[in-house]
Length: 350
Image (tube, rainbow, N blue to C red; front, side, top):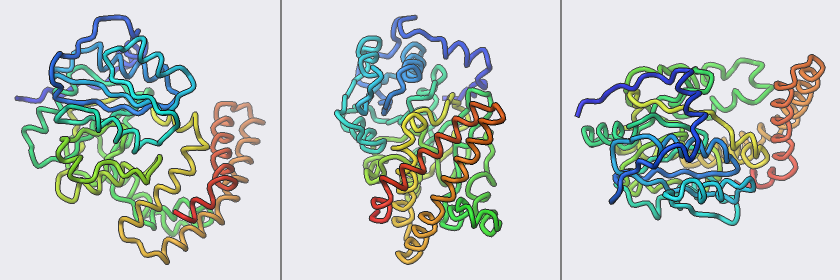
């Protein structure tokens, strides 16, 4: 089956998807056993979630599919919105926020599809994207994981694949080390050196906003590691899948990704867990306990500097009338403050 490259999302296309009303059209999901199970974990993103589900269910996808949604104790009415406006969605409600990995595993446990598509709640898909994924996977049985191109609402491509991180790359984030430039090359090599959105290619790590796997591969490689509550779990899954299968950036499918919507709304949850998630990743990657202890010490020493820098940045931006930028600085400061006051012990015990 030849693959039809999808046109990039135009500004008109982004606008039309963003305006899609949940009741605008009858669902087009096919009846019968699903080929693909789309798994979505949600926390307090009702409006974005509505657009995500509309893009899946109100457009043809070319294969039989289902949507399984796990709501992590949202307080904005998101779960009730799904039950009301998207009754075809299988909805699981958690009493607490169990995290991204556990939520995805919950969805996979009740999913019936031979393929699993793990999709962030702040995304929108194009018509027939599921059929494109299935066609490529069936034509390339050695592929264990596929990730589409990601484009932001600003029209720019987002980095959706990287190399595996090294401890040196993460040390570049330490303020007093970044000023030296000592680890700049390692960080650049990890984050940006190889990124090119066009062209389907084998990569080391896919970002977790949208990943497509055969169920058999997902189960055989251990599923999402639930020690990751939020952050670095996509690095881990890519690494585990990549041990025996190809991990592929699939350029024929493009997904609109707003990015960091849930994490910004709940910075006190996301920021510390991202930092702790990297510790889990490096330990599984074989980094020595001594090196990890040194890294913990550097991160701990740097946190007050980060907090002071973000608060200073907030004050300066506020004084200059840059209120949107100031709000982002204050949000980052709150995340660092929560790490220092509430999660530092958990960080050292991780």
